[in-house]
Length: 275
Image (cartoon, rainbow, N blue to C red; front, side, top):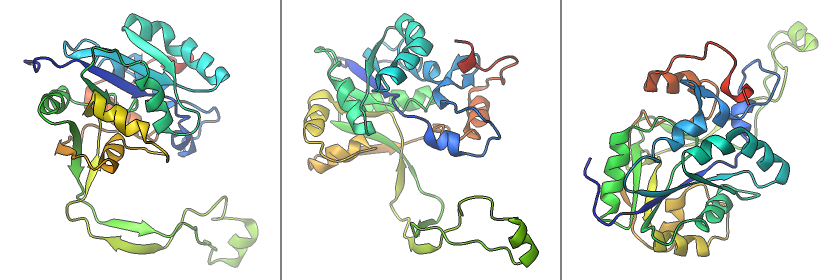
């Protein structure tokens, strides 16, 4: 790969989340787990994500933003600090309330010689190298570039409130069968036209000064960096993403990530328990 001339990219990896959705998924496990500690070919998810970037000639720095709270950050540093240091990573505390605060905290550690900033989800450890190459190359010619995957399925907007699911059998209702927790049933509010809709992926890459300007104006929680740039009225260019660029959200995504990357399941204790 021929890297664009004059590009020095600082990669920010927000890793301050608590994996709430990962632990809410039905796994049969009693102990809460952080998805970034899950095993991918003998290394934690977070390390695999860092390794997508740390050896690239066009990357000036990799910054991982961990939890904000003292105790959580200490545990995070104990699990990952030594390995991240060996990979040349700068580790900092993230935000207290939402992802936007975490990215903003990491921006303070971007080196002066960086020309661009890429933000990549910590839970996307199997992003294809050719996708990263393409996004980085386009960023040398456009101030803001993101990969997207066009929506192929019908999209439904749901009512926010769940509905009751009462068993038809009175005896089952008395015994509590079929009603062992909060209902996950909701009514459809509307069907959304999927024309020109797309899922945003990462890495999202921006000229450094543009992203700094966007985050200087942040006043509401944000889960998408490009959205903040859009609020400035600046154009964001899209390029086709890749369906293999999955974001690990539930335990079911772990074997899928292993299959995409060609990793075997661990034959011994899980990586997050070896520390």
